[in-house]
Image (cartoon, rainbow over all chains, first blue to last red; front, side, top):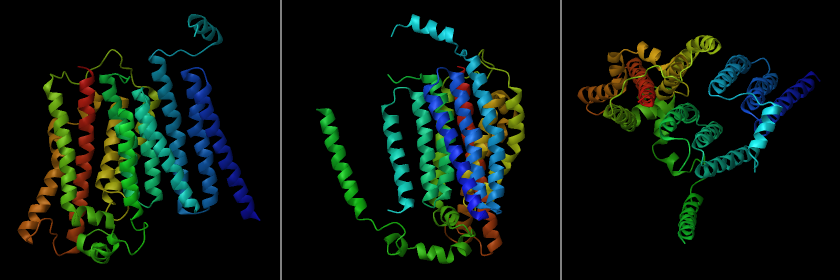
Length: 113
Length: 82
Length: 235
């Protein structure tokens, strides 16, 4: 019974992780500017990846594998937000400015395509 | 067809798609990133086929370092294919 | 017209290749030609003969050591070519460009936190390569990637200051020198290239030494590529 509950919990974790990946990918394709897309895609690794790894750790159980998975989670939790920060900083200094409704309207009227 | 073969087949389809996209791509920076994706998919295939030594090299060289070196080259030559 | 010709050529070549592939034995089948030739001999005696429990390493560094020597030479030759091209124009070396940002404190902290772990992992891969998957080249590439990462984050000038020129000279050529040394020593002591001594611990020591040399050589070759491309960017 408890084994069944454990696999259900693992499946839920993995499925919600996949959902975050899907949302991040849709956001990357659909959102208007650099910062919004970055905001969407950083959730893929930092949240989706961690959720999937947690699910895998539940399936693996108390094992040597689980220690490695926890180490991986720590690595992702540290490195992925840092990569997002570095990208946002580089984007800002390269001249990207956050999209607003006004700037979007202006762009539309300037480029009548 | 076993689930293992299905996994291999999916990765092979991804590899072919990536290779075609790299060949067609006019934006060379995007081509470099797709090349990283290609290398990483190939790395997964190596692991799945039981060759972890090759997979490690593929992940470190193909997906990591060549991208950096390619980007430096692009910074010198220009981002668009002529 | 040309497209049609290309299509025909591709179809013919693909057909030939598929005909060839269909004749191959299924992967992993024990009757395959590769498994009936020398493979059984390697599996039986590889650990003792080559001083490496990991058979991939045994084949790479002992049975097929001349091949690996060739690969080391290829990387070294590529590095020489890149350095020669870099010398052709007069380089002013890496300097602060107008577009260079100060290091972000967040990235600086994280890189300081992670760098020792990455270096440890690289060293582990190099030294344990004769037992586990991994090995000199893989570990060396991880080490090189770490140094390139440091160069990207902290700036190439600080990386260049950490690596004095004489050290670069020796670290880039150490793999080549180590292979030549082992090959010639084998020829002198036992009569053929890459012959290993009788004692098992000595064999293992030589294999680990070779792995370490390949790792350091690969790492610094990659750093060499990076530094010369970086210097080139400011020209």
